[in-house]
Image 1 (cartoon, helix red, strand yellow):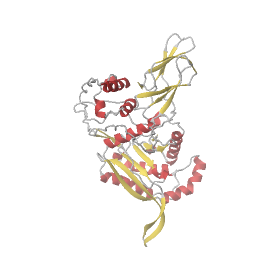
Image 2: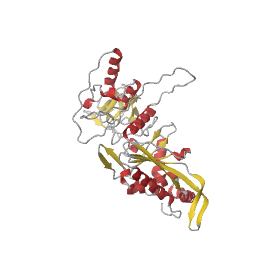
Image 3: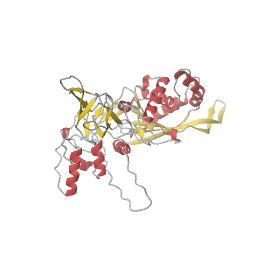
Image 4: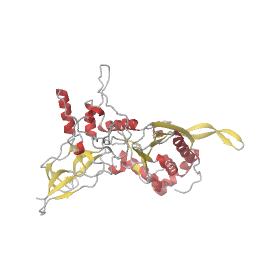
Length: 438
């Protein structure tokens, strides 16, 4: 019987490995074409991997919780037919199951540890999770000798280290780091994993974080250790935008088949300002500023599980209001229903979050690395405000909203950050109440 190799699929541009969560089939089981064989997890989403052929699962090459590089053979399937040689079929990136979706999860990136004259090491989410559970800080993790590619620490390496440490055996030192990188690197402060908390008494319930919540926690701490966060606020009169949407929303839905929320209108204003202030659409690499020519807006989306995911509207600057609305609705529905693909969370250059959806007036969002800014909009509230007219000042009832933006003070100074935020506010205040283009 010919054999087909099942390959760990490519899950996105920057994803180089995935963790096997669960095998749905075991050797000897029959498999139909496109039937789920296993579940895997990346730093973005959890995904079901379907079979690329029908037949019998003859061999499983990795165990659950193993971290496997993209493109690696993970199983073999014996198929019926007359083929005389083995063939390899690489599955397309599958649709995410998203039982534990990720919005802003940890990515295996160089640790923020100063390795003077050397290169940073990479650690998989599984290794980082084991390190946290065992109370191993980043500096201690840095000293573990790795047997993986380029000296990477594997699951086996860290478990052996833990066993030796508990037995009082002195571990072997990690090899000397590689030659210094070509670009100068600014080292962020090391984030040390906290020791497990001990509950001494009282009426309490201990709830272990699920995998996605741990990844989000890691990502947030990493962002704080990497960027110098500053947050600015402005108050905006959005009465014209609110009245226009109220007037056209039924016609818009009837004609376009999409519900018009405030989100695409707000993102539209942000995109216009990003074109004028491109440094807000950038990232930092050492002492270099990487200006992104494409404007890809990450849209923070809350999920029923309480976790967060950030799907990306690609080339948002090339979309009209109808296009933005369709993208917002499609990605939001895909996130809530577990239908996002891994690529849907890749490549964001600037993040938008609407904290007003949950009633908050304002917020101080954390930057989604490696971006340099994140903008939050608060709830729209009616308030009496002073209105300046040619005849003099008067008091009127207006729809008011706070917008805030956290930005990386390493490259975005207060003047630029405040100027950009004010520009977004003016875009919203000058909304054309007679607008007819969609």
